[in-house]
Image 1 (cartoon, rainbow, N blue to C red):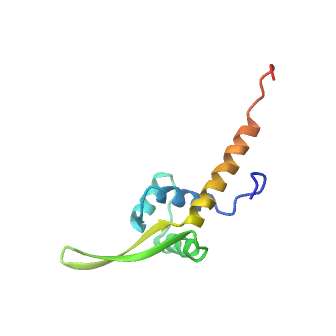
Image 2: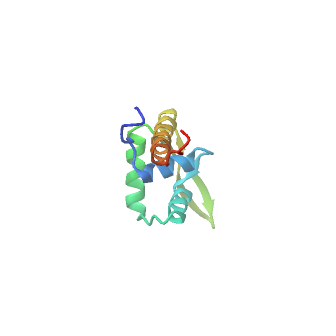
Image 3: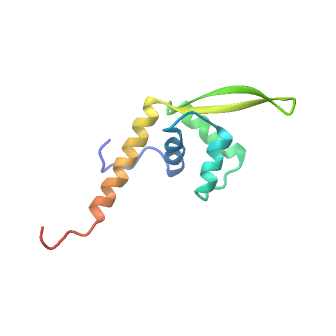
Length: 109
């Protein structure tokens, strides 16, 4: 994808993939990160987006079981895939190129 083509992922997908660059994370932590960015998504809408990212091969998910207050909890955890990293990098490069192109040129150039 050239930096002239629009990114293939949305701004929300870019934000989620960016959060996953450091390490695998549970869905609740990813939702918290989106909330800090001002994005308020219902749990069903968030997990539908994550399912689309999984179907596209940009993230992989697994269930982790743990006991919390004597109750067995299943938690969905996600990690970015190589394809997800490439999509994130292409999107970052697109926006960096847009920023560079919009900067005023100096009179000396």
